[in-house]
Length: 244
Ligand SMILES: O=C(O)CCCC[C@@H]1SC[C@@H]2NC(=O)N[C@@H]21
Image 1 (tube, rainbow, N blue to C red):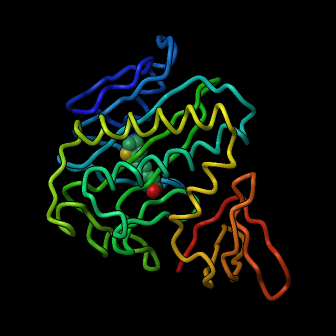
Image 2: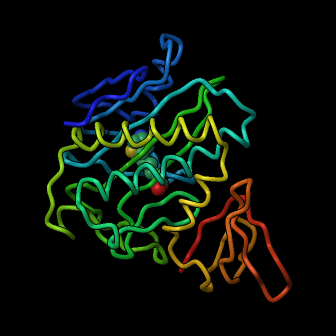
């Protein structure tokens, strides 16, 4: 059994609209960081206003904490979280090679998307919503045409992990990385994140609402920007959807 990290609250709900919405409701009452888990969500949201489906058996969690730093630094916790997710997947499956990280914060299983993260600010709190396809993945026809195929742990690896068990491992992995981030800053997180990055050194496409940049994925800089080497030189991209 994994020890629950000291100082973190743990709140498990059967059904919620969204753990992000519950975090917003709970924020005024919290005295420290807290994890919120829902076994089912009825109105979950993904990045860029997309819907996110959470059937029973999948993981839907939110970590809420008071924001200690300026927003740009606090947002680097999306990398802390995706690295914690990577370590959690390896811990529960024993299959390090099956998983990879996709900038800015998706986790891939055998090249398809198995987990996504949505970071939001609520007043002086940071909320990190995490969705993991443990049991079921949406069909390829339910996601955008160029999106990676959704994958689930159960359907792809034949490994069943209960959301509560996943939460306990993730909370412990996160707490260890949060302590490292607080003590040593982003550099060690960035190095570890890059060591698991998908498509590093390969040509990828970063698309925003306005434009599309194609280039070789060279690095993630100290501010978390995606660095692409393009035909017109080096591009630092702050926010985009990445396509392989
Ligand atoms: O689009 C993405 O990749 C991010 C998906 C984030 C989904 C999670 S599930 C738990 C939390 N509650 C929500 O409503 N969304 C996030």
